[in-house]
Length: 122
Image 1 (spheres, rainbow, N blue to C red):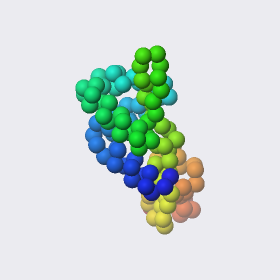
Image 2: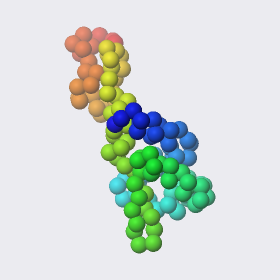
Image 3: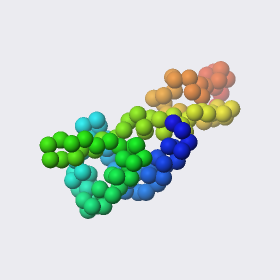
């Protein structure tokens, strides 16, 4: 991900409702949710959610598709993954105290040194 795209993504996520929408869509999974259901879940008006969905889509963080009469939105997992990767590109940068979540500990990023593997606190 290029820095310009990352900045657009962070700008879109820097608003409470939009961040909540993305988190809701991530939980909803690839099937996504209809705009009306998102509005209900977020307790905002349909016009308000429409504005926020447009911003998130412009930033590439969500996608839409038509299903019958509804527009269904889903998280763009590739874009979200790219944003996380952008943040972690320089993982650790010589600071082994920075650790990934436990479920990612085996990916080589910030691997514990041999001293910490022997039980030494880092």
